[in-house]
Length: 168
Image (cartoon, rainbow, N blue to C red; front, top):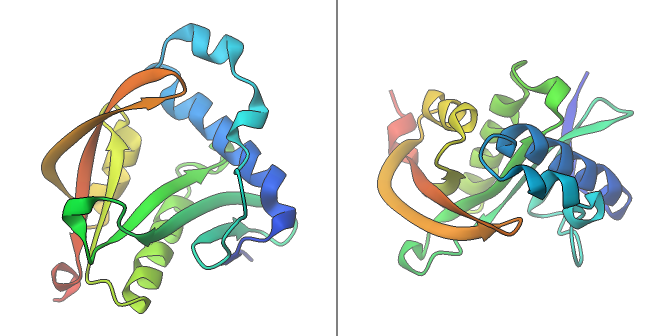
């Protein structure tokens, strides 16, 4: 049995492990090799307080193996929208439906907060993540942006989800 629950302070090191190991799998072919040689796992641990309202974890009761972080959009031109900031799983749990479960949970929580429109940004070459979003009614908006990630420049593409698109 698994549960999705609000993160607590005791989850900090598990979150760091999830981020670090997920990044190694998702971005190994995207970022330069020297990034991985020099990367300290401690950099992946959350900084500051963990907000249990917007950071939720996936657990089997003994191990935390997934995380979703969401809240109001951080984009100036998406005022009034919800945003999924991050969704990661430990690599050994990928491809088993856990990403879909976390994504659905995040979407429902954003709806509960009153957001009808949701967006997220994904690294352009992250085909596995893009496939997950597309299979769950997120659509590319055509917007892109560049940002620094682990010391390298990456291009991200925006995906959007509208509550109305979920109606039959």
